[in-house]
Amino acid sequence: MTGAAGLIGSELCARLAGAGHAVTALVHRRHDLIDNQGRPVPSRAAGADPAPGEVVTRSGDVRLAGLGLAQVPAIDLLIHSAAVTAFDATDAVYRTVNIDGTRHAIAVARASGAGLLHVSTAYVCGTSDGAIAPGFIGAMFTNGYEASKAAGEALVRASGLAFAIARPSVVVGDWASGQIARFENIYMIFKLIAEGRIRTLPAAAGATLDLVPIDHVITGLLLMTAHFADLAGQTLHLTASTPTPIPAIGTAMARAGLGTPEWVAPAQFDPAQLPAGERRWHAAAAALYTAYLLRDPRFIAASQLLPPCPPTDAGWMDRLIAHAVAAGFVRVKAAA
Image (cartoon, rainbow, N blue to C red):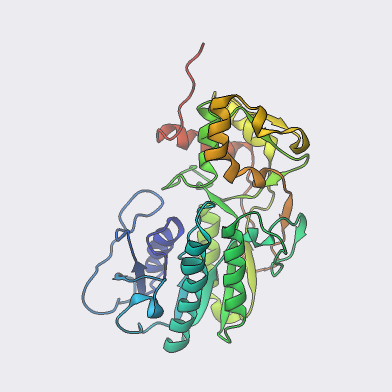
C-alpha cells in the first residue's frame, strides 16, 4: 500500500492486518502508522516480508521509478493511496506525486503481476453538478488536485491491468464518535469561521458538500480489497447517501457556540469589499475551499457490494464539531 502513513492509509493498514492480510506499507517522510483513534499501528520495518496479519513498513518514494524500492515486492494487490491532497500545491508537485506517482505504481503492479486498487476522489467530477455516475470525469476542474487525480485515473484505465478505482468524497470524522486523527482540508474553513477570521462566504443556492465518515470509506476499501476479483474495471463512489447542505454547516457551528458565517450569493460576494483582516484570511486560506460551496454534485453509488453510508445528519455534524472542540482544534467563543 502506498500512502500508508496517511489518514486513510494508516487506518486501512490496521484493518487489513486485522482481517488477516499480509501488508507491505510504503512510507516516505512519516514512518509511524497512527490509526484514526490516535493509536500506533503494530508494524516492523526490517526483516522478512509480512506474514498474514502483519504490517511491514518499507521506505520508498512514489515520485521515483519502482516506487523507490530496491526490488519489486511480492504482492498480489497494490493499493495506491499516496497523493498530495492540498489544494494549493504547484503543478509540478501534482505532476510528480499524483500523476507520475500513479504511473510508477502501475509499473510496479505490472512487474509483480498484481492488481491495482486506485484511491482517487469523487471530485474528479470537477465543476459538474447533478447526478454523477461512478465513471464520470468532468471537463473543467476547480484546482490542480482534482485535475491531477483525473489524469491519474486515465493512466489506470489505460494500463491494461486488472484494476478498480475507489472515489471517496470529503473524508471527515467517524460516524459514531466524530473522531478524526488529523484535521485537514475542509476542517480549516471550520476553524476560520469559529475563530471569527472569516465572517462572510459565498454559497450558491442549493449547494451541498459531500462529507463522508472515514469509517464508511474504510469499510468500502476493505470490501473492495476482499472482492477485488469481482470488480474488474469498476469505479465505486465512497460517498454520503445524502450530501450536507451548506447552510447546515453554519447551523451546526452555531449550535455549538462557534458562530456562523453570513452566506451570500456568489454574484454578490466581492473579496475586495471585506474588512482588511478578513480579506487577508480569505486570500491566504478560505479561497482554496470556496469553490466547494458553489456546487451540488450528487454521487451515485451503483454497487450492491457496498452498504449504504450511515446518515450524515445533524446529530453526526454535532459529533464532528464536538470532537474538534474536545481536541482543541477549534474553541467555543467566550460569552460576551
